Length: 291
Image (cartoon, rainbow, N blue to C red):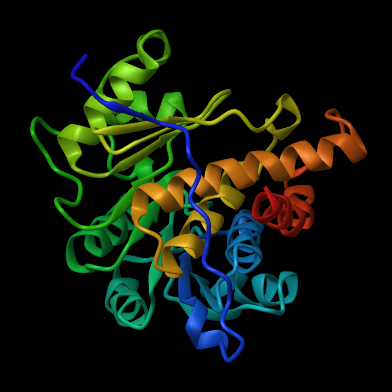
């Protein structure tokens, strides 16, 4: 494996200025959700708010817009053209490009579902938008498998957050192959793609191909539906607050795991759910700032 720098020191956000306002702390666009998966959009959007974003807009297929708006009244929503099966339609791309042009960071993928239209929209946003993007879940699956030497988003600020199975689909390997060589696979992929990779799991890895951070927070209680959606929104919020992509991903996975540990200490592992991470994120920020 090529040389890399092992990173242990964590970044910190600067103290908030007294005269700050919601525009000071970044506007995040979340592109998520489909029929039956409105919760993914709510979780991701709420995590962006809990991560400190000044404003968050959640763009979803029009049929679930009322559900998402009710699920989190602190975000604004945009209803997108949808397919017959309740997924984002291909002709939503122009509107999404317009919405993204007003954002400081974009989170794409949670709950979008599979289909040709989703793939068209995901690829269009990646290719035609230049602002920082966090790509997760169905957003990743829309790209898989990558063709030989295909670059996802060369030299644009990008964070991918796959679990081992999703990374395996991207690179055309089996999940056991990825798990056997987690660090080698993660560093090599990030270096080749010129992006930041968050390889989720116990001891989540964060790498840009030159640096590697191994996260030590988190617990098995976080192995529950929606936990990854929270991480995606959190990293997008940190990007929107102008942390560079590696630092945003590093701090995001640390705080995500710390929130899970704080929730576990109060609730136990067995009953922990993704919304508990949202409730404990503020305490995770306070604990990190005090260290």
